[in-house]
Length: 143
Image 1: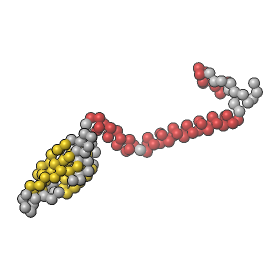
Image 2 (image 1 turned 135 degrees about the horizontal axis):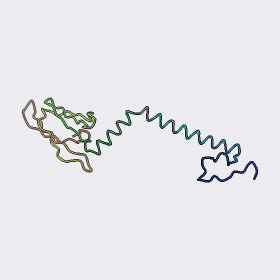
Image 3 (image 1 turned 180 degrees about the vertical axis):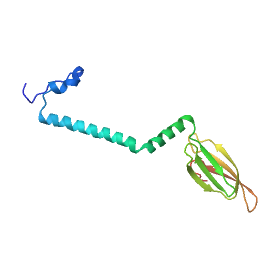
Image 4 (image 1 turned 60 degrees about the vertical axis):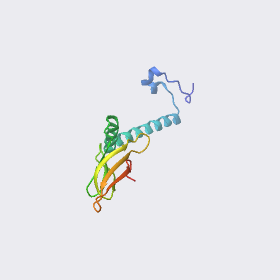
């Protein structure tokens, strides 16, 4: 047993491994590098948890909204012909579009499932007083 050989570390005696282990300089250097990289990684993770609190809050809010069914859209229409989709869990406007006429009724024609939901918008033309029905894509407001 020379200075370049190392003993096997027993799992039940991991607290005192450094007393019983004979390491070469390169082995000690390698262990120190691994320890340093581990410390840097832990520091970065800790730092990220402090600096990205808003991102963490937004993620938690989205997950809870999906879990409890609040990830719905509120579709609103105005007399001037604007139709907008608002996210119920954030209040954010997801999309907005214009239709010719005063919006009188909005109905869900088809709930999404595997494809985009369809929104029926009933408008009354301000010029001719005709009724106009539009079917909009619920995901992006396109016709």
